[in-house]
Image (tube, rainbow, N blue to C red; front, side, top):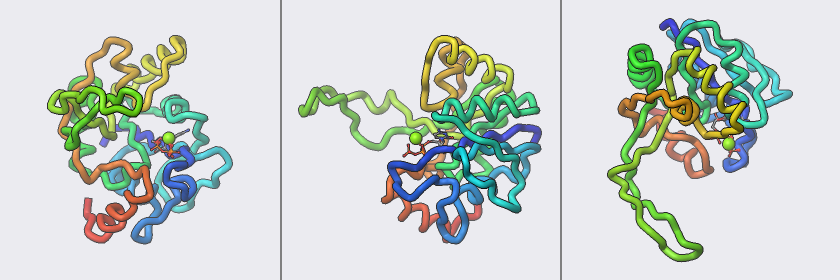
Length: 213
Ligand code: CTP
Ligand code: MG
């Protein structure tokens, strides 16, 4: 697959409390190893690690030092990307299927920017202080996942614009959207959930036993 895969993996994993997620073992493999398995067919894989972390051996990837924020880590990875299409994927989503990777890559190649989304299962509210506040129409809302695919030049422009304007965002699509470029949606997958809290490891361990991506 003619894409540069950018893996921001430089987070501290503070909510999980078990050190950087890249090196966390689930079912005998690190989250980084699980993640890379979905991108074996990619022409180039670049990984941002926490400053000072030693790059793991024997993995087919190029390692560099991440930044203070996810956005900064992606910006550094983008500088090193050498192909015209990039897929940005969080190491915190180790169980992403090759089918989802291909779906995003295909849409991004055709439209310049594409992200996977899912419907929201819970009722959503905007609390007013300690009170319930207003419910949001969940049918109108979506959960956004990675991988997110972009023309490399477009994402570079979006990051440069964000830096100039002082914008910060938790994903890359927001920055592309801020430029005024439309981001296409593809269907996400529940198994590509984000490992964020300690309880998420129960599902991760269970998936690791049956996963064949
Ligand atoms: N990330 C990064 N560089 C940072 C911060 C985050 O590359 N300075 C990456 C994480 O490694 C992760 C992704 O961004 O793959 C999404 O971040 P998140 O789920 O918040 O992971 P952490 O930042 O590690 O966790 P926490 O916020 O709980 O510390
Ligand atoms: Mg974080």
